[in-house]
Length: 497
Image 1: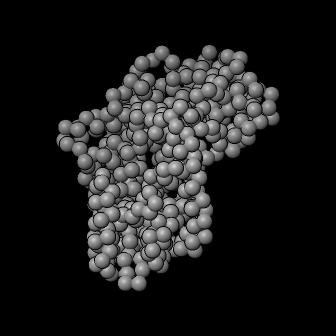
Image 2: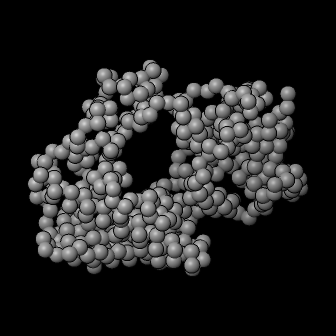
Image 3: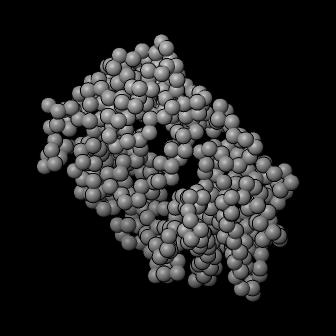
């Protein structure tokens, strides 16, 4: 039997599901085209910064030829004591690069760097796998630790990396897991060697499809399930979905008489019986009668930095960088549109955002949003950062009206909403044939995470690329608030029908 080449990432994939390696080898065409580059870049940035935690270091740079990296590591190990980044090792066809290796006269210490704000079980597998390789190569591994982001750290004018990172010793756990790792490596080798391209391994779906990461092959592994099925029920916990799946209650027909939350049963009923729209006019009237002119329809776009960019912010804090604002001053006024998109090089970006918003919404009208908790939380954070702006942020929050509530409460529901109250489902349900309201028709950016990634990418783009991305950001955000105007217009229509 040939030993399968296992890197630490491929080993961790197999811990989640041993079939992943087979799928990557034989069914790679089912991998999604658009991977989340933002997460990858975040991990790279955090990893690069962490390399300086213990002072000066030598680095083993990436080379496709692993033997080059392993040989460079051997040479650096002779120059002890030192710090080596990406030290590379192989044992019995098991390979790892150690993020940070402290190379002392009496042994070594392993530091595995993660961009997360907490330690996950899979990180323990990752670091323990490295311990397995190094100890089998004869190293005295004195310590194994996880380095991760401290989400309570508030940045001052300068970045303090010792405060930014937490370090947790997991040596005892790594030692305890060695027999498990040895057995699992043997299992992976047997598994892969016994399944070629014509012999697809059997592996049922389960919670492992989403833990610790959402598997890219979910659509492939569920392609034979009836449509719609239990996994299409909006809002249901995955544990409940799998409970029904294992009971053989998979299709909506199977589920229609189950003891489920009324909202889930309603989604199933509307789908199976093609029900007419359900509209509680009283609930819609309550929203409309609460509004006061001028009407400010506003939506924020935000991004997150693992390494805080701005003074006064924490890792992964939601940073508002853009808003779109549609304004209706009174019953007879035309719709006005205003917008703000930050300069990516503005060191006071959050304050500039807030001041622009204050300028554009000077009167005490209704501040109309979709998902109040999000915008209201950003306003509170701004008020906390800038005490002089707090009264205005409080004013916005006190005047805030959430258009999402009737959809969330199922006071307004149609089959086409598919159990969701996301605006991306609600809007096409209310205006199915309006190309002007179709997010898929937008040029570059179609949803919030794409907007966030686009803004984060601006610093690395040419002026021409920046201009194209900024134009797409404005176009996308403008549609979000125009969508709210259209929902408001729809509300006005339905109460007079």
